Length: 471
Image (cartoon, rainbow, N blue to C red; front, side, top):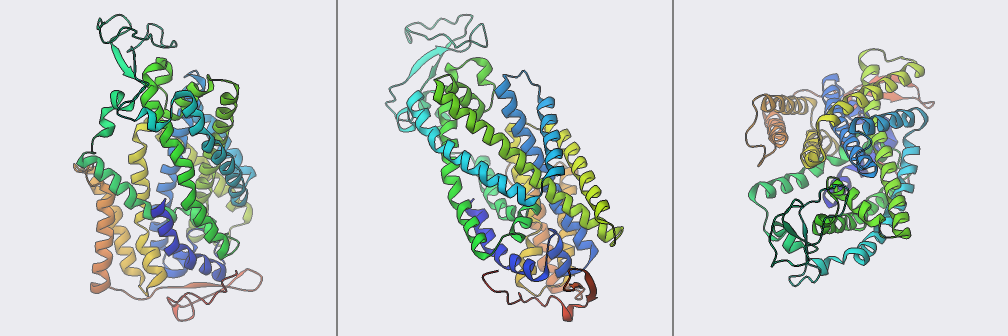
């Protein structure tokens, strides 16, 4: 999140002021305003829609894992995802971006309060992290590897280590102490793991360029609201993710003592299942936290779909009919939402929670393709041609690497190789083939109607308009 906020601090202030001055509403408005060609707008839209599809897919995978954990596997994966699809389409029909932002704020408060209580509830029930991670951990015990009934708690090996007989319930395995259960946690990560962590963080630079996040920057009330949002994002992970890490460590230590059915679930679901059985107030805490998490997944996925729908509407107005009626554009947006949900449903059925890290790396890597568009477009007087060449080369390289079954993906993700190609081509084109200035600006009359189209001399000149700070 530190990387994301740092990227926001560079891009969002100028972008928002331009949005106020130029009356941007669509995520692609800056690209159209700054570069003025259809080819860059289309490639920019592609670099926005694909990550949104991946983003919605990730939300569906998380939702399905959560529902399956809550239901003990009674509700199948496809039904869980279908439930979310139906809810998203209803949200899309009834809500808007402002309503999504409002519900996100409410859910965030509930989740933060719940997560702040969770470490103390887990500590009281299973032991605090310093205790279960200590070299002389006093909660060490041994249990049978599995039971004859997967819904029952495994038997305790009371006479371990004297008794080592393997029975129908399996051998005795350690539980209750991290060092005994997961000794690999104390080892330095291998080179491949280090590379994954590095590129996971680097690709977060592109996260603020998600279409729905750009729209949120557009609709910020003023610069102060934008600064408060970035400050909240900087603080929130330390409040929300720290309890999540504690949940993961607790699950790793005590997982062998839980029924096999519980162990099959994700860390969040299995810990919630175990904690809810401790007592009444723990059950209430888990219920509130789970409901808030499910609602947050729904609204976050809905905002991503709305961002993709906005890009589709922009493409329709640009390619098909600039004078399309409001009703037709609404139907185009709704159709886009249905297509997005259908495609995400298909991807979510074949991808799993264990692939989430790779999914996020690819998603943000695609958004990194847009860095020259915004980074150079906002701060430098660069022409359209180098930007187009870079986007085209980057996306073409990505397709080629996928088809060629790029072998080094475990060390340098293929999406990052394509991003490097994009950046290299942009730099080369600036010196070799800078091209002509093709910018055109759709001037807006006082009543908000498009009045005429002016040339670059009367339009965007590479200088941010003098917009008051209190807008």
